[in-house]
Length: 115
Image 1: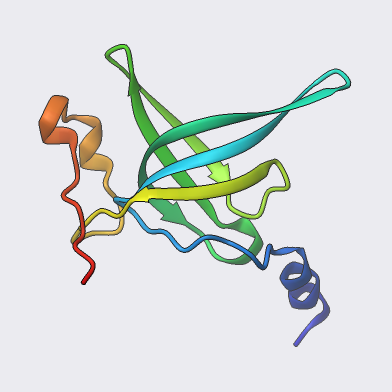
Image 2 (image 1 turned 90 degrees about the vertical axis):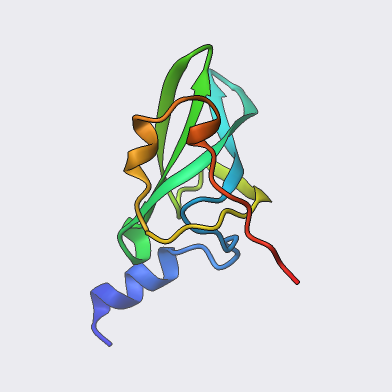
C-alpha cells in the first residue's frame, strides 16, 4: 500500500451509517457561529452517492415551501455529527436525478420492505 492510500484510509470515518440512494435521512450538521457551536438537522431523500474513500459525497434533497433544496455533504467530514436513516427506499438505480422534475406524491420513493 502506498503512503497516500494509508493517509486517505486513516482520514476516513469508521462509524459511517449504511444508507443508499432513495433512503430518507436526517443529517446532523455542526454549525459554528463565532465561538458557539450548534447542531442543525437537514432531513430529506438521498438522490446520489458519489466517489470513494475520503472524497465520497452524498446529495440530499428536500422541498421547502414549494422550492426544492439540495445539499451535497462530504461523507467523511468532521462537520457531520451523525446520519440517521428514517426510511429505506426501494430503487432500481443509483442516481435519482429524475426526482428534480417530480412534485407532490410522484416525488416519493417506495419504501423497501424488510422481513
